[in-house]
Length: 292
Length: 240
Image (tube, rainbow over all chains, first blue to last red; front, side):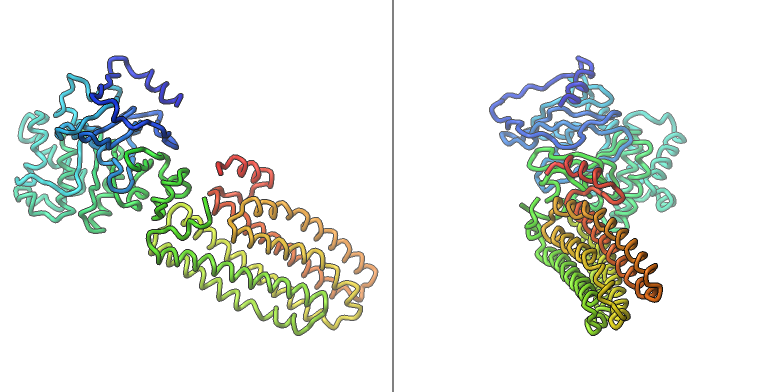
């Protein structure tokens, strides 16, 4: 892993904070090597030697992966393979689970995101998240989008806030459908619209990275197609990491695909290569629907 | 990766569909191979009845081509195959087109053989393409074996034989031209024999195409339009 060492060495010393584990004995031996290209030249986020534990149980074993700038990276794998857990480490969503322990090095633009002085609220504004089930606040459509910018003080007056709300809704391809009912509750929208509202809400605070955890699993094919189209458009301005159970979706929306299996990152590569010529047998078996 | 992987899909029906597709191609291949053998036999032995049978048999191959293409479309639409399964379906779509053309070439030889069957002194020139035709038929059989066994080494060995067939065809053409100069009254029949030789040479080319698909199917590397050296190089770089 010469490349990993080089990239590790290139990171500033101060950011290389490694969280120490209390119980070392439970770390599974990292007796595997990720196949393919986990590292990219222009990384927006980097994760190195990541181990995650829920209590005594190790959920992720020694994963190192870059999220490239302005790329869509898809994370696939069977249930319980650690892909969602890994995604959640990228904006410290696992911090809210008391028994969860994370070790490893994480950086956003070279800056340690697990450092002692890191404000997690600010981090989650920079690294936004869209969840599996649309979860709008029980407030108006306008307020759903305005909430984030307001708590972060991004708008100085009503006109600025209106602009942010409209712009976010437009970017989420929702504005035209809701422009006449901005004061109606967000929960009254259809599932697909609610999910786009959640994306607008995530965009409103001008994040740099958007994490999506199965964003279309509760949506019909048309709503799914709209979200996928949106993901493609958003890529121009944002970096996106998406966890999905739909392999066709991974194949359609992403430039790189990472295959997780039992807490390990088995293979990463260009999406085209992963879906036509995977190198690892486990990847091949998973994407072709075989179980060995 | 083993050939037996086919049986490990979670969906049994998908297994059955892919297996059915593979065996349909082998059946079509067997049919085409038989056509080639019979075409050569009809030509060399002057068996008019056999020649007629071969000349008429390509409709069966055409039907199989349509049927297998439909099976492929069905699998693409309903299963969205990936990786090796996708490569197999794509390879088969291209393979059946080649097999169908081999069938056309064999039927062409059949038609020529029928016309040549009652030619005067036919023995003196009709047996000339025997060796070439045998070589092309062997290549076809080898290509189908390589597909059945997913044997890349076997496929590459067949691809390497193509220049031999091409050389033989050129030699045969020269020989037939000599015959034509010596016996101008036989020119028409000589040209027919030359068409047969040309058909066998084309069958060899199609067999090469089939082998290239076997390499693609197994290793994912598209080796069409590459030299045999380049193909060997790619194969040796492939992690088995």
